[in-house]
Length: 257
Length: 321
Image (cartoon, rainbow over all chains, first blue to last red; front, side):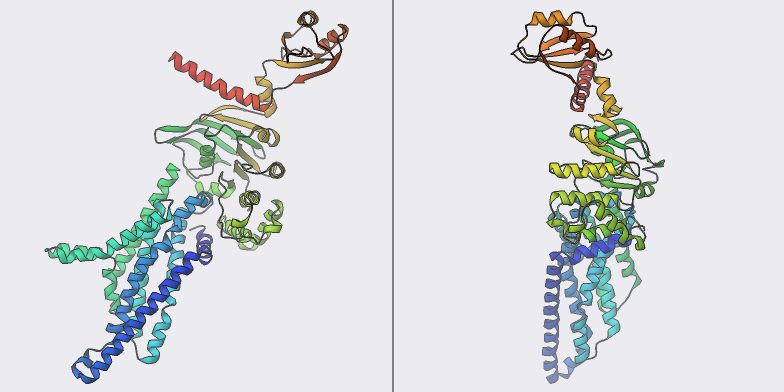
């Protein structure tokens, strides 16, 4: 992995010095704040009603009514924003010619791909850390289950990583960042809504197949606090597959110049 | 130090270069000359391990570019044709990245950056953002990036393109100063540049090597005739000149240079030194000689000859086949 740290640091630096990152972070935090507020407001409204209705009070659950919806909202927000973080990874290097520098420096192709991937993952981690204060407020008000929150963060991080790997691949396809972002946005949306196919088809085998393919389907167990190896494997395979495609793409780019 | 053996590269069905072979010795500065689109950049991209050749072998310091690419890349400093820079970085930060990426030990990075910064005259822009620099400074940053880490082979693709004359001279001087310590291979389509900076020239046209030699030898080789220019104080008739020339051994012809009959171009056999005899004959004839000067073929003309000759030969072979 020669050259990994150099490229990784360069990627982070280019995010810190680019306005795209600040705009994405701003929108991300504003939307997360709004979703958190609306989830909590809804929860408190239900709580008031439950005071008159003891049966309803039994159903009240902070995990199901605040934490879980919040993380599902967050996954959609990141689905919409991640193409903007990944679009420049290769496209910009190709456009400006710096790819020629990277490919003639003593950096292995593997190190280059992984450094770019982990660079954006780090940025995503930073965005996630920025949502922690919400749960600290929750901790102050009530008693949330921190293990569930940890499982949620783990799941969302894995899901985000797979979004990023797909965006990395589409960015390697073109010199144009808009095309890269559009392709990755379209593909991500496809991976989200493919689970809806499950409700159209009759056969249970196909239903399960479509659900299994869906990128957002696998994050749901995490939001219930379930950490299942199957879902972790799905995300890791997803990432490995798109990293593999990206490396093939760069090889082909080398041949064709 | 640099060996290219039968390099061929196809872009789809179109060959960009064909059977390109040459070598560059350690410490030499070699120019790679050719018109635009001749295959210079393709050859350079193969040598720098950016792209593999369709067939043939490229070796740097005896190491194969394809088999041991990482090892080769550590030995090369490369400035591509379009100077690749991260516009959002400062010069310092960019060079730090280059040093780290090239695997320079962390303790030496600071010293190495300082060295290339002063070598390339970048000290007063060190902390400025690259995107705000002028073209000349960007070119120098690109050169600094190639020189960082003291690579034994330096490959420059059109290093002076787009610079103003003063900057061109500066960059040329800088390149010349690298001779001996580094092996330099630079491409260009500007002849005086190569003639002034390089010890040897490789000329490529339409993807094939047409000549490899020193600039002086190339000129000599292609000079089939040598010309001497004579200028007189008054108009001289043709008969008079003919009278003077007829007894001189080695004169192959003469013609007036312009209409007034004062200036004449005498063509001579390049193997015979005719100038003493010519001078003597002219003086004895009593003509008022103002100037006598031998005209050398410039590298530009040599280049044009090589390139056009190639076209003529190709046309002939097409006719024959």
